[in-house]
Structures are given as C-alpha cells and as structure tokens.
Length: 142
Image 1 (cartoon, rainbow, N blue to C red):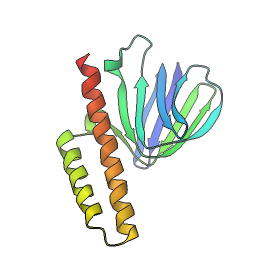
Image 2: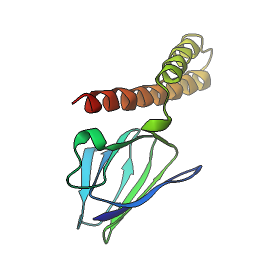
Image 3: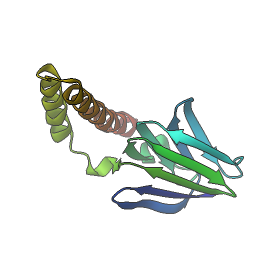
Image 4: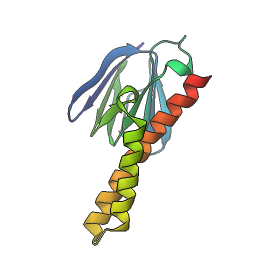
C-alpha cells in the first residue's frame, strides 16, 4: 500500500492508504504503486484516479478533477498538492454543462487577452469536470 495525501488550496481532500493512484502529468499519465521510485513532478489539469484495493474493479475508482500542482513520491508516501480537486461525487453534470456554456460565451465576448485567458481557464476547468462525470458513467456501466 502507498499512503496518498491529496491537498488543495481549500484543504485536505484525501488521506488514506491506497493500492494505486493514476496521475495526469506533463509527460502523460503515470501509475504510482507501492515501492514506487522517488519522484517529484508537476500534475497537469486532468483526472486523478485512486484504486483503494488491488481487488477493486474500475467501477470503484475514486475520481478527482484536478487543476495543476505538484506530486512527490517518497518512501511509499504520495503527496499531491493541487490548486483545486473536485471529487466525482461533488460534480453536478447539469451545473458543469451550464458552466461550460457560460465560459464559451465569455470567450466569444472577450474584449482583451486577460478576459480571453480567464474564459479559457473556465472552459478547461468545465471540460475536466465533465470528463470526470462521463468517465464515471462509463465505468459504472460495466
């Protein structure tokens, strides 16, 4: 087992021993298991997957929408510090779709580069949240 501690700017999101964590990094997804080599890397905006037990099927994966941060692996301790982490259970699909549509409208009406960048950040955040919702639906159908 590896101990996962997931911390966002709003506080502790996860703090338990787990079997596997799949992390979106700048070099692609990596899986961290027990006895993983020491590592420090950045986490990209994307879906973080947590398998609590080796016997857990994909339908039981814990899912988080994450938005950038840092990963440190050392001595079977996995520390992940992120700007934000939204658990799949806390994401409402209708609200995420509405936020996505509003962000697209903001981008369309952006008058300057700052507004355009802000709108794109909102679009990216909404897309990741929707990705988590859709992945969860897909995996629980199996």
